[in-house]
Each structure stands twice: as structure tokens, then as C-alpha cells.
Length: 416
Image (cartoon, rainbow, N blue to C red; front, side, top):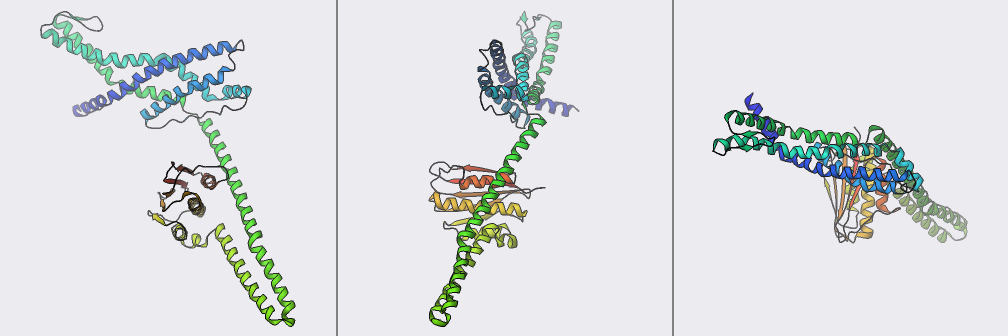
């Protein structure tokens, strides 16, 4: 039991500096919160006579960096990030005011500002005063025993005898025990911040619904664009060639009796045109869903794609197994688009494609050593990659500094 108790005290002592630091910074943010409450009260009072109304949205925006700082601090303290969920302040003044009034996050922010502005600084003071008083009251009996008489503690206790020395030591131990509870106080302050500054379940659900609505719309747009591309390829390519074959065979039929040699040449031309049409049809089918993808899986399909790349390409397969068909198709077309973009714009000498991730998540990383500076523009290839990822509830990140290299990273959930 003693070893367990001493171990717990040791852990608390090791956690003490971080806790004191957290509360001290909390004292500073508490002062800032107090000033923010006063400023908001002034703006609200001015709004009663009309002159402060235009300043309300700007005042809220100016305060939000303080709230962001507190979310970051509390998230680090608790080990889980706290993400804000504000409704966007867009539109004219009337729309922004309506958003401010309807957004529950603003009311929760105000509650935190009032609470933290009230208790933040006192807690910071206690975080410093408790350990200082504990050390002082424990040292006073030692100094009195060493011959220094008439010393006074932080609470007015004067050590000049054994009874007063014993009382001072007991007070020091009490303050020391309270000091060891400082990490609990810091954690409690972080939990209060999380309870007020984290979005509630309704806000998270609303954001999720909005996100899924947007990704569904993007997926439908991408699907429509893909259908239009297929229709255009068939109309301008294979369909035109097949029409030419029909005309050539018709001419050959007319020339068969009058000029057999010309009719034979026309038939050979029709055969060449039909072969070209068949090749174009195969390309269209491959662009819809490559047969190698369904027959041999993503790894083989990507290896074949890399072999056809104009830029030397290395493929790294980190133990990738078969994934759902929709995920493999999205990953394949993401890689194909990224390779096409690199070929057109990067001036790269080398490409690498990496497939990795646990069974529940497929990660695709395409890296080139080109000129960099790639950006996501509406209607561009990278925007198409992002839409494909978001359609499967995934995400794309782009790292392309000027001068290169460029890294396109896509994460695709594979379901449960």
C-alpha cells in the first residue's frame, strides 16, 4: 500500500509542472475572457440604440481566436482535439445577425467567456500560491530550529516554539496535499472548456448531413460528367468510325462488279476502320472499369497503369489485399488522373505510387519530383480526385511547394 501511495504521489508530482503551466496560461486567457465579456457588453449596450449592431459580427469574429486557443489547450490536456462547429457568417448584416442568434455555439462561447473570466485568474493564483505556501510552511520549522526566530508564514502564523512549528508543518502538509490536486484542477478546467466549447451532438449531426449532401451532389456531378465523357467518346470516335465502315462497305458493294480491285481496297479500308473502332471501344470500356481491376485486383491494375506511364514509375504495394469494388475503382481512377496530371504539367523525371493502409482504410500516395506548384482548381484533375475521394467519405491532401516535389495523398474508407 505504501509503495502504491508513494507511486501515485510521484506521478502527481511529475504532472505538477504541466498542470501549473496550464492553469497559469488559463489565468491569462481568463483575463482576456473578462475583457471580451466587457467588450461584448459594451457592443450589446450600444446595439440597444442601434449604433452597435453593425459591430456585433466583427466583435464575435475578433473573440473567436481566443476560443480557438482554449480549444487547442483543452484538447491537448485531455488528449482529444476539440473542433469548432460554427455556422458560417455569410450574407448581408441581417443574415449574419440571424446566424449569430440561431447558432448555439455562440451561446456556449459566451457561457465559457463568463465562467472562465470569473474563475480563470483565481485558479492561476491558487496554482502558484499553494506550492509556495506549502514550501514556506514546511521550511519555517527547519529555519526556527536552526536559530532563526520569529518567522511568519503566509497566513500570519509566527513560528517561535515547538507547538507553532508543528502547526506550521501541518499547514505545509495540507497545502502540499492540495498542491498535489493541481493536476485534477487543470483537468477539470479543460473538461469544462470541452463541455462548453465542443459542438453538441445536434451540431455535429447537422454538419455531417451537410457534408454528406455536398459530397453526394459532387458525386452526382462527377457521375454526370463521366457519362457525358463516355457519350462524347462514343459519338466522336467509335460511332463515327462504324458509320465510315458502313459507308465503305456500301461503296465496295457498288464497285464489286465494275471495279473489283477498288472494291477489295475499299473492303480492306473498312476492315482497318472497324479495327480502329474496336480499339476505341475497348479504350472506352477500360475507362469505365478496367477488366484487369475486376479480374486481378487493384495491385495488378495499378502495376499495368504504371507500366504504361510516360514517366518512369515505381509502385510500392505494402501488403495490400482486395478491397470493395467501388473503393478499388475510385483508387484506380485517382491514380490514373494523378499520373495524367503529372505527365501534362509536372515536368517530372520520376513517379512513385504507394498503396498502403489497414483493411478498413486504403491510402494512396502519388509522388513526383517535378516543378511543384500544383493547386486544386474547379474543373481540374485534382478537383476530380477530391470529388472521387469525398464521394466515398474519404479525403485528399495536396502538398506541392514551388520547386517540388508534389505529393497527392488520398484516404478511402473501406467500410466495416
